[in-house]
Amino acid sequence: MPQPPSSPVTWDSRPRFFRANPDATIAFNRVGWQRLGAAFAEEDDEMGGVAWRATGVAEDEAGTFRFAVMDYDEDTTFLLVAPDGDEAVEHVLAALERAGVSPAAVLERLPVAQPPSLEERVAELERSMAALVDGAAGPAQTN
Picture 1 (cartoon, rainbow, N blue to C red):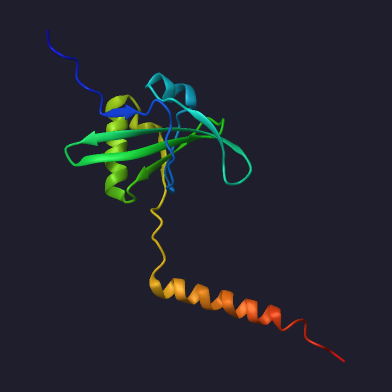
Picture 2 (cartoon, rainbow, N blue to C red; picture 1 turned 180 degrees about the vertical axis):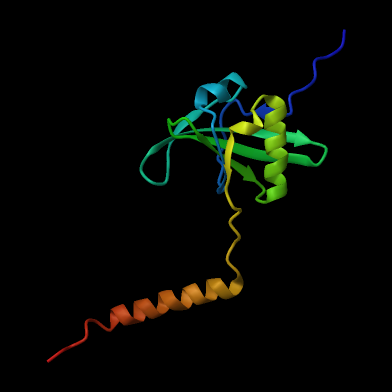
């Protein structure tokens, strides 16, 4: 008897820790993701709210890509992909499409955040140090 084709997406039974920037907004709610096998866990987000997170792996000929889906009890969810980069996001979106997410559900691709350059980090450090020095000098005296 032939084996059914394996799913291009494997969901974690318990969501894993995941840190990445949002890569896409998808018109798919938590119930839709759960129908595809996603297991969500409630967590506090970094802004004092509550989010629901599911994590999984998308695999294709190019490799294995970890991703997360963040749900804030809205009609849309956020897709996060690691490693960062447009190519990884494309592979995950293609795998999700093969798993049952319509390409029309992808509402917006968010720009990939580039890490600051060494020069930008040094400039930010210099600004922070200057602000500390200015603050330590105290308020200016006026007569």
